[in-house]
Length: 214
Figure (tube, rainbow, N blue to C red):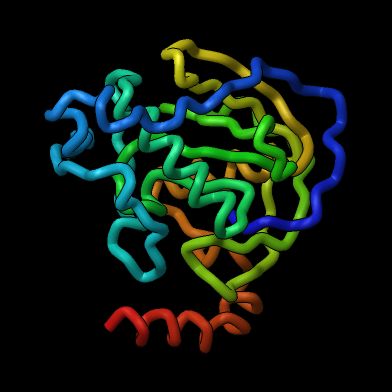
């Protein structure tokens, strides 16, 4: 999810701050780990080579699979995703957006390194009845923006980089980021949720992305 002006969050949520572990130096990595990390689907990937994939990549439509264990390699993937998110810049990035069918996303609504968060095997619950329409974009859909209606408040449960489950609730930008990134884990894009008028307005930009990929 691309960056946008951040509004201070209302004091209705809190969770333990997570610190990313940077990739270990070559000398500290075992040969087998240094080469690749296995996805739930069985394909292997070298974390430093991950890049953001763009629409209409088939990876964006695949259902992400649960991560069975939080390993050093998963942490390396998370660190690379955070790096890509900040470089874009954006406020969130999900596994499918880097070509991985992993149920993982990273988020940072403020842009401050201390606010980097990693969410592994997330589950959303308790959406509020109140809903808001706000403009969203997507790092995998550059130049595409549209009004998306989402619940104002929601709760997330996920696993952190230490393998512990945690719960958080938000009714501000963070709640929208969680929902946007969890959509990615289910193969859902903002073009699936935006109203018809916005889809029509973005039709040419979508065609350009498709042409660039062909």
